[in-house]
Image 1 (cartoon, rainbow, N blue to C red):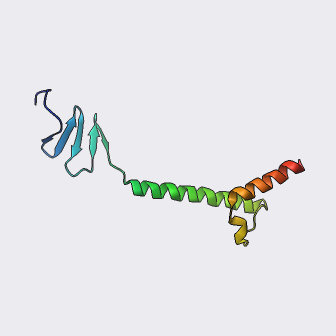
Image 2 (image 1 turned 90 degrees about the horizontal axis):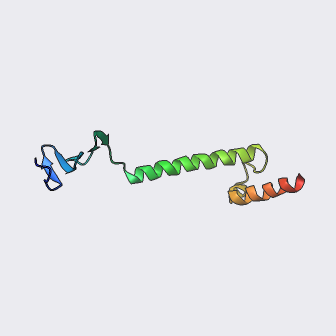
Length: 96
């Protein structure tokens, strides 16, 4: 194939997108300069990020309960985490 070939073009079971970049015809793999990449499902990535953030918030809630700033059995104390931190943080400052 001459170097002036227009891209993209089919070449066997791949589509040549440019110099040193190929995509499988099923769209599952992209090869660029010899490294293979698999497209990620954006929705799946968003769900994983949300679960990670939820886990972090759960850890913060647990820590605030452990130090007595919140009570596990009081549903209203969990209503606004930022306010709980601000109020108790201010009380700590004033007590110091």
